[in-house]
Image 1 (tube, rainbow, N blue to C red):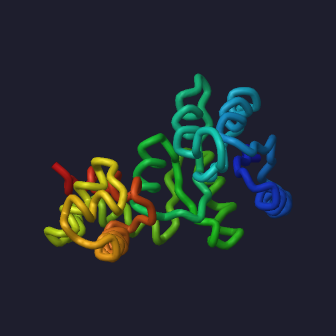
Image 2: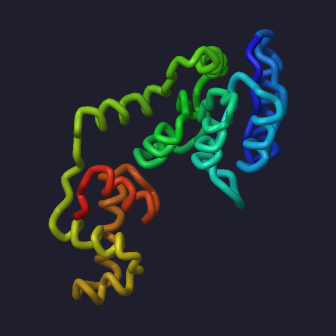
Length: 206
């Protein structure tokens, strides 16, 4: 029997997972958490084999920080990330925080069950798209950005908004937005913070 703790801030999602996991005789759900702080407290109290962790948890600490705190407990369970996000930044941060596996919510139920049992034994399980990104990262694949995109990325790292970037580089805000879209696509992110994080990881910034 593999015991688990659910952590997701959406009540409907948790209810769906509870119903799904309840159909698997070898899995027992010990508890559910709606925030990162609650997940850390329940993990310390219930000692599950696996914590099924979402990354975006609304207010409070996110899934990555919760994972970091859970894996630092005296009797740490394994953390299996279950999320809709598969950007390089999210994957790198989660694995760096100690997650045993990284699964996308689009996976079939049998894949989720198998991943939970594997995580309980300390074996790494990655969704196919996630595994591809990890392999590319390990091979040292670096995105190629133009000089202008690197200039804008540098301004992003300074915390400047679109208007200030446009003024600093003597271009229009529309041009800044266009370049940002291309930067996001190349880095596999969808936020400014994600772009800066991946750029630092890939050593694209000085």
